[in-house]
Image 1 (cartoon, rainbow, N blue to C red):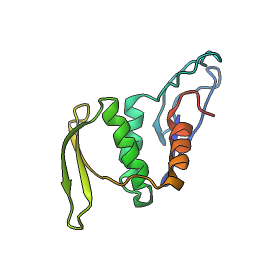
Image 2: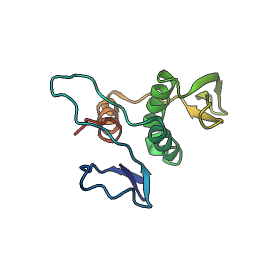
Image 3: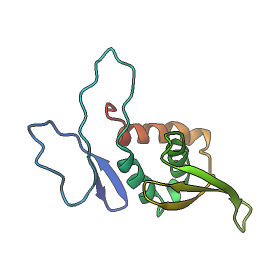
Image 4: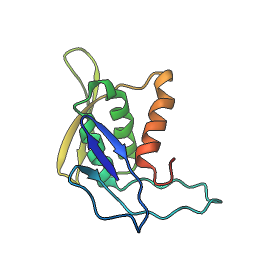
Length: 134
């Protein structure tokens, strides 16, 4: 389960016996099974949870590179469809994405992460959005 704590999201995991339902501040929740230790496949959180996280990142300019990476992931998963590329007044590239699930259009600045941030973003996305992440 993802819980909103101010501007941050925190992941909480529960056993079936301990689960009493989502609290009011839950950003999203899902049920998964413990993976086979021999399996190397990662299981993503449901698309609605990923969309909620993506939307929350919009108001966090310090996380613009993470939002860009998540947008690319959602395009790859066919949750978003790239409509066009544009530039803003400052000459920065923008991706215009359409989400049929929400019937919404999002404009995302194309801000690739620096080499220092790549590992940090991978870890944060894995921690929040992979079903079998630590």
